[in-house]
Picture (cartoon, helix red, strand yellow):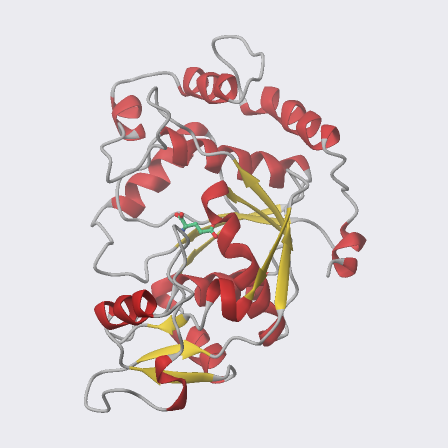
Length: 301
Ligand code: GLU
């Protein structure tokens, strides 16, 4: 058994330096273990997909030297998600976002600042049988924990209280990210998920879905998001400069790699190659006592 890693961009816009840093770390992790690396385009939310974004991402990655062994496009795999959905205990939900918000506000336990938790209005039958229905997963009444191998953090969530019955298929038929990511990582045998720290809070529900579908839980390494000078995370919608501008402006990829490495606090010269960065990622893993032994995977909760 060897490491299988992946980078899973959403082709919703041009890749920026923050996406590039996550892509770099995912690649370094897989290659530092001599593993197989996948590129997966998460393009299910067709309304947000931008034409040409996947192609530009492929070019950006290739320019930085971040190669991949296999490419997966989620929109070509709908039957897989359909089959997984059919195996889960779901119910149709016709509540609009507005109604859900109103119900949350009316309930005594309205969360402060936390993400809204669906109060389960449609559990006993759809509220509006005539409307197109989303499908929600009736989450098990249990606590699920996710461990982060990079930070050592363990995040536990009580599914009904902290997460709520999640939508796995929207009322327009679009399968939810949480379902697709779990099905895809499981089907590809992904052992190590290196991704942005913004997804840590979504990990327990993904671990819960893995459990319900009988899929193994990979190791998770959530890497910090790149922030701008105001301390705000770079965002495609926030106008972060696209990587393609550097590529097309004839910047040297080795200089971009060096900047990304320096942003992580790594001491590198002004221009580096990927081979120079592999030992630095290995050193990061050694610092946190990351085990290269995949047998440990079977011992995870
Ligand atoms: N597609 C997600 C994103 O671009 C990443 C999902 C994941 O790595 O699990 O933010």
